[in-house]
Image 1 (cartoon, rainbow, N blue to C red):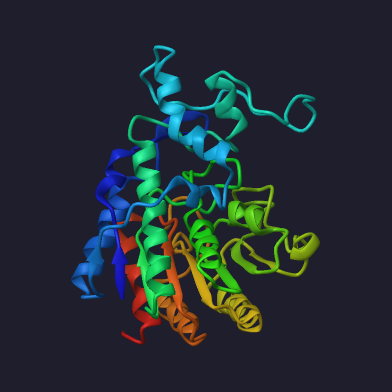
Image 2 (spheres, rainbow, N blue to C red):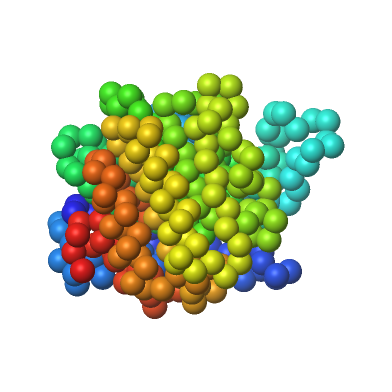
Length: 344
């Protein structure tokens, strides 16, 4: 299986507001390096650098004004004389009357385009997130051009980034950008399965009113799990997208037996959609020892997860998302890929 990876991810190292303090982010460069080392150790396949893509490919899933904000935010922040990482100060909550248009000043823009204080912007952020999106786009092209599968080793991750907002360590939605690119390249239908512990709220947001992209997410029950405000089972899509959004929330402490039942439902929905391409948002923070999640999957379970996805017999792009137990992230992520290929 081809892996697409860019070392530009090292240019972004963030902080986050968590548990009442600003601290170093759980989302670190070591995550991607550990996965890459495991890819090489298992002989998964060739590793290549991504092709560069025009910003319009990102804006096809997001909006041009949001993409432009991301590209320019650090320069606007630095122009105020500040050199620390940029985090939002205020958010346009529901009752505020003037929440439809972005402010002109960077402090207001940061809040307007954010859902939390977990996606800081620094000098290297744009280079890192654009290379991450380019990795997903390169993988989508490989699959569109005949590869049965490819792995975009994306960092930063993307599935919490919506059409016009960042959050949860995510800036550009790599999986959604890849799915939209596949449609633009001629695919009639695409399916996205999100197996990250956290609901893929950004991907849902981008495709919620569409029938050509099926979105399925298996995740922690939102009443007790980040991002809290999306991911309920009754969120089924709107307009043309009604019935093409399937959320499968699961309770704290879910073991493989419960997860497998949801995975079978997800795979059945994908099979019924008959997609030309499957995009898998590959998060392995469902692991039993993950520090910020609460499922109980074990290392061998990821082989079984990959095998289930392989049985769909659909050209597949894997896009790296979460997983914060760094010692195990490489083994668990690559186990999914090995299982998909029928290798144990």
